[in-house]
Image (tube, rainbow over all chains, first blue to last red; front, side, top):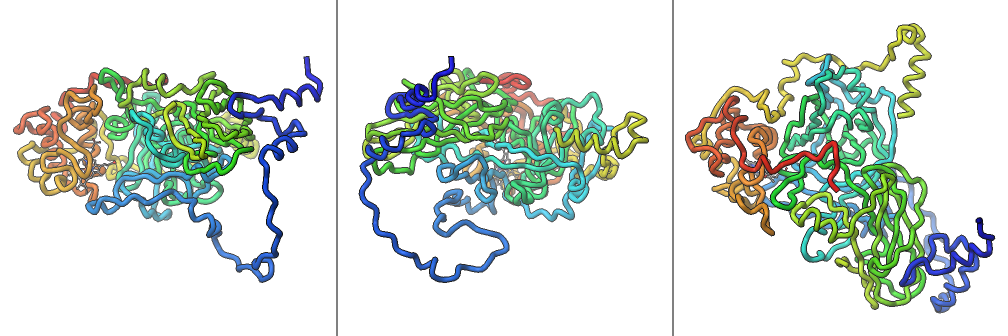
Length: 428
Length: 178
């Protein structure tokens, strides 16, 4: 039976889980303001002054906008010094998840992983060739591809090595960025790969394809043909503008939900094959070393995961009272259906609100109100997707896989909040 | 998906003649290319070794290539530092500190030729000749005790090399590992 408005409002004001977690619709219930304001005991505000920038004209326009200078801390972290022997070489740089909101990663903050630098590709000279087990090998210019019917989809890209630190025996000091920042989400626009493959005429013997980049690593990965025909795209645009050089300009493959490395950047070649090519980055790397020396190859999907971005390490809770816990959840297997949050290290859980839109294989923003009473807390979030799968506790994942797997760690991660308000990465 | 279907539908509607024949017209803007003309890009070598180029080399010849072009980053004996260790590590995969190298971990010998030819040396990729690539691959395999120093690697012999750890790999796809 449906409850009356008043009775439901009363329920929404009950704690949703221990240690201060409030109902996800707490603020919709009304009458909440009084209670919380009284508890936070705010001091009187300073008198207001009219600032300088209101009393003189502002700056002129610029051709390409930049963030406020006051946001300079929001970057992809210290550039790691490369070995003097390398011109640039392999490396990565991570998205500052703890400073961002919503589900979209700004282009200048999308994570980057590359294996021999960022090539400086002239789009006039760049080509995409489709060959191998096809009736008609074809070459496309970028102008050709820009004339095709396009599709757009919002999709996350996550490096298979993201959160790999959680395999270590001891909890590493780190932030949402340094531990989980090989993760970003953008709106990608381009041409359905299935359409191009149909034009080339796929030979029935083909079951895989090799995708290869034009960078100095000639990065190459095998992709099952079924995935290519299902939802893969060759992308020209990222969040409305041409893809940036560091993310694959002028052309990148998108294989939604699969290991980041397979979304081959600087895409120049697709070869249809009768089996996987067994490249370095699908044998030596991006395979999972399990117990008893066994290695799992071609585990592609990035399974369901959630992380709390606010508060997270680097934040200091300066006073007791209201905080919104906010984070990201995603699944390479479909849509997020539920995110649960705990403030007592997993003893009691409350369901978080999911922010629209909730899209398949895209980051989903979740939020839940929290009243911090100043006690020690351990915050965790866990994601369930529309296949019914819920991400595992860390000890469950390690028991199944051992701690040598390096990749695909989707265990629940934990932030401790100390009585002084410091937030740290812990195992709980 | 739906955008694509819509586009296809529009094209169908606009070209009634084609539609009558049952074929969906697509842009078809790609230009045909001959196998000979795309050969310079067709680098990849699968485990069957199809496409391996002519040429040959043994570990004895490969040692000098390795010293000149690889050792600065991978160590004189392939022991690693600053870049990946290429030699040793056998018997460590079940330990707490597994050492994954060409010898202890890699499942296919063709991967070595494929990768070195496309991406190494890091500072000047795609500059080795086929003979040098076979020879330096032979050097790394011999340093791992997988072949003998005199064994000649070529398009026929390389794919037949049995990698000691191959049997430990299994393929997850189309399933999933949870």
